[in-house]
Each structure stands twice: as structure tokens, then as C-alpha cells.
Length: 384
Image 1 (cartoon, rainbow, N blue to C red):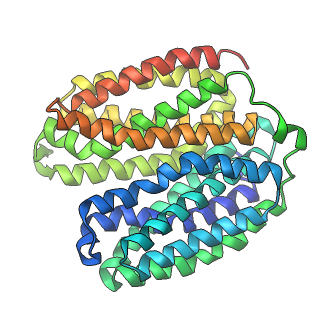
Image 2 (tube, rainbow, N blue to C red):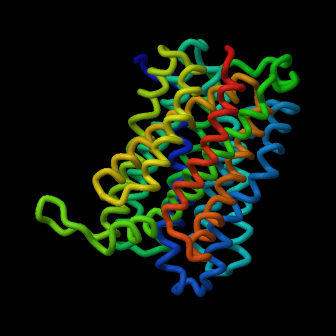
């Protein structure tokens, strides 16, 4: 494996810093919202509105970068992300929180668009999977560490002090973002104006599948699924392990796989062939989801989940590569499809529970969606 290019390192570090405020809200708000005077439904709105906003702002970001290319878009997006984190810490008004979350959705659309294209344009195409893996992996590792430290700081210093401090710290993201743009070439005009290549609908559907099944259906309902299939606790090596502990362990490994596995899997796909890898990973995830839907033994269920997470990490890396190769507009469409999936997925997962169906139907329906995507992948990625 090669060392990651400096633009990818700078941008990934900057992104991991500026996304800390958003990530911590998912950790802190579910337990701290009464102290802020928020209702449960308001928490749900705040934690989802940024994703719904991105369905529109992803295309705004693509237009701005294409029509008026400038590193200032990146700097402004990082600065907005920093200001938003400070706002989280100084207000308890729902309306102000709501506007801040909308601003964060706009900011993240610009940052994701710029990040993917930075990875695409910072080196040769032959190592693009590895570079995209470093982009995702560095961001995931530092963000995970930051969330852990942020949770500790919250318990020691309180909600407001933690979020304001993170907002001020994330001001360092702006100069890092600027440095990431200095050493890469501008997007060629011919590329920024070209039509999306053949197969863009397949890329969009693949992105939708990743969003709706992984972050949408499985991650949002994992605790419920484990509690139903395993119970409140289970015994392993004569030790009793609670379902909450198991859930946090599995999610922790999910983030760890994202951080460590992305560059490794990206580099492996560069050597094996990225198209071939995409055609293989979708059917493999289909089989693993089917196995998880019929397996109640904890050790096998955990094994299948880990394989699913590994496949998902590789797919997210490789599909980002394919979208980036097609140009900024393809990145926007792919990101929007994934965001839509992540927005709809929790509704389907919890809807299954609401109607009294067994939670393993979540895996079963996920397998059905992946089965369709496997067919789409064969058609879309069946040629270079």
C-alpha cells in the first residue's frame, strides 16, 4: 500500500474535526434532550432534517463547484460547520437548533462533494480505490476517537461547554481544507460539463441500497434485533453479556472496520479489479443478510454482521470511486440516492416492528433489496 497523498490526509482530518458536533448529537441528545426542554419528536426531527435537506443541497453543491469553481466553497463549508457546533452548545430553542441542523446539511453536501473529488484528482487512477479508502478511513478513525473523547468531556464539563469547545476546535478545519485544495489540479472543464456516463442509474440504485439497508434499516434497529433474537443477555465463556453491551461492541467494530478496512479493501480492489469486486460484493451481502435472517445463535449472527459491515465498507469506497470518475454531477446523484435511503430506512425498519413482524424480517427485506442490486450491479459494472 502507498502512503495517502497529502490532499486526502488534510481533507480527511478536517472533515473528521468538523463532523464531531454532528456525531455527538446522535450520542448525547437521546439522553440529554429533557434538560434542553425538547420533546422526543423534536429530537427525531433534529437528527433527521439534515439528511432530508441534503436531498436538495447535494445538487446545489455540485452546481456551485461546477459553475463557479473555487476553494472558497470548501473554506466556507468548514466555517459553517464550526459555527453550527457552537450554536448547538449555546441554545436550547428548537427553532434555532432546527435552523442550525439545516445549515449543517448544506455544509456537509459541499464537504462530501469536495472530499470525493479531492480523492479522485490527487493521484493516478490505478490507486484510486486505495485513496478513496484513505479518505473514508482517516475520517472514520479520528471521528470515532473524537466522539469517545467528546462523550467523556460531556460527563466532565457538560453539554454546552463540550459543544462550544468542539466548535472552536473545528475552526482548524478551514485552513486544513484550504491546504487540501492547493495541491490538486482544478476539475477540467470538459469533465465538469460532460453528461453522466452510461450506467449512472445503476450507481444511484446501488447508493440507495447501501443507505437504506445499512445505516437505515440495520444500524437503526440493531439493538431491537439483538434483544429479540438473543434476549436481554447471553452467556459467553461463562460470562453474562448484556444486549446493550453487545450492541455497542458491534457498532464500535462497525466504525473500526470503516476506519481500518477502507484503505485496505480499496487497495485490494485496485489489484483485483474494482468492477469485478462490485459484482462480487453485492451477491455476497445478499447471502449474508439471508443467513442473518434465519440465525439466532449469537456467535453466528455477530459473524454474519461483521461480514456485512466489511462488504458495506468496501462497497461504499468503490461506489464513491465510480461516481467520482463520472464527475461531480454523478457524485451528487449518488450522494442524494444514499441520503434518501438513509432517511427512509429507519422508517421501514421500525415499521416492521410497529406492525408486529419479527425483527429478522429486517434482514430478509435487506436481502431482497440487495438481490435486486446484485442484478443491477451485473448490468452496470459488467464492463470497464
